Length: 106
Image (cartoon, rainbow, N blue to C red; front, side, top):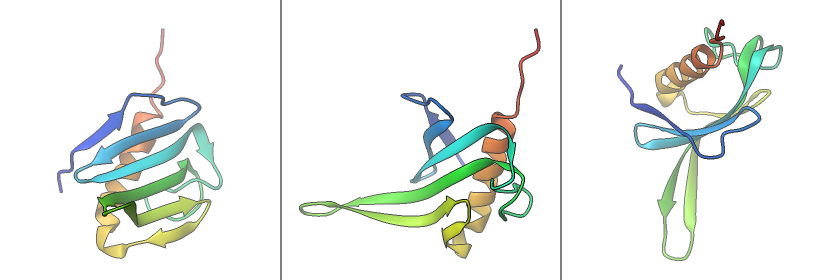
């Protein structure tokens, strides 16, 4: 499965990152080191991962407001997890874990 993951470069600080994956939006809190309450990138369970907060959503403009459909929401545990999008969520968590584990050596 090939997904187009894009990180929005504006205002990404303190580990808070926003972006897009295909036609979905996401935001995450990523730590430099693994934390015991993070998402495990292998099993998507809580424990030993860098991502401690993740929300995957889609905004739908309505007449007077915007409706937000949440497909995955993780805050130290899964509050919402749409199993039909599990592969996309797994790819995003692996990407974030891999991207922010790179250390520059001088």
